[in-house]
Image (cartoon, rainbow over all chains, first blue to last red; front, side, top):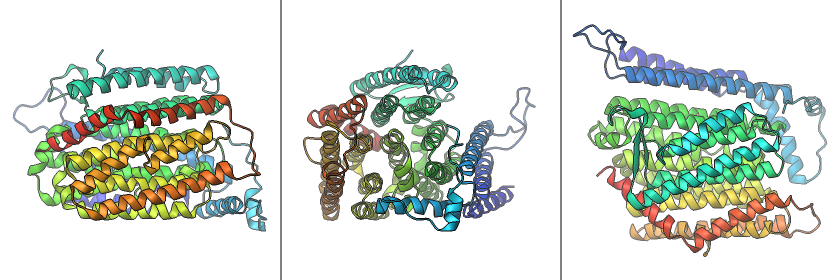
Length: 142
Length: 458
């Protein structure tokens, strides 16, 4: 059982880490979700005992599973859920400002800003960048 | 109600109410300031009590001592809680005065202070994680406020990288629970001596990576410059002056407090990574022209000192790490608050912050550097002492480079900032000066912290 859980955790974490390295922000968010679940599964697998559910009328003489890790996992799941919602909201805002969820596009527009900072004057943009930047930024909800 | 529970009982409901209220109105902002100021006063009273009578403990919910979750204020936790919440207070006042409009700004600052207070004052590993996530989630949201396009994308990177750190922390905590069978920090420290060395090393490395990411140490620093460079000034001050303390506290508490054998084993590696961090941060900072980027790299460099002290080990070095974290947090918060302002008082405040961070007497930073110096001499490490000198000199160079650029260069006259914002900066500068002139309480508390960390495990 331990080996099986370890394998599942490893696969989840590995898949998540791979997705984190993708330029598409939605894949990055899915990667974080997978890693969050790998962590939750690790917590529940770290229980000290296995047995019947630790709910009040207990059967005498049978082992009881560790309630503490289950409580911790519940908490971790809720935190993971909140984090996912926050990340998706942020990706949505990136989309409304940049009209793109691709990190390469974002890096390109950021580079223009940095060049402006370095030179102290607005940089002339080439066509592709101008197109990416021409979207109105005013619709960002504050 | 006990002093220990009071800050949380005060901040938590206020944060929830502020989340429902409209933060764009001045009244909400000032109400949040009032609550936060009250929390700072309570924490200061708690710090005085800890300094006088030693650690204070409460078991939540009236459970028996070994069953319930324990809140525990010792010297290290209470000092960092006080400084972090005070920095949040200064940043909140600064934000409210300079008319920061995002609706959730006051509420997020309050939630951040709940998380910070809770994590510094808990004696339980898992509730540390919960408070830690509360603080981090507020910080992700705060750093995306402001609506500029690059803020959101750098906040997203900040969030993703730090979430990876948080989940590594969770995995390490699960492993620690499995190995020791408890989550109570004191009991963990007691039982950690008996666990399998291989397991302990893996746990220690996971904790190190998790907190290294928060602190922005050299190999894990890549998220830091873009966030510090693009977030709002008040938010950046909070990130550098309050949130970075989590990393330092975590390293001190989990590595030095819970797993000291593994820390001693990796001492050389820590000193090496710390050294690289110091040199890298300083060299990058000298090469940058944008003032906030310089300060961001400076933060990376100064994180290295904590690590070097941790690698040297022993009560003197641990006390030095705690003291350095506190004064560095104050100095960094001051610099980030001052850097975007212009007008009388501000340049003086910036100079005080720069002197403090560079470690010149009579400012607070001097005692941090002096304590590290003492730790280096005590450990007989010539390299550490030389590193402190070189690091200090480089800090001096880049900070006065930006001072010259920002305040002396002619032809970029900007209207002076609102008087209120300048007053906040001057007040923080006065605190830095005061701590420098009268450091005894802080020195006593950090000594106590160093002793307590060593005693936890012996």
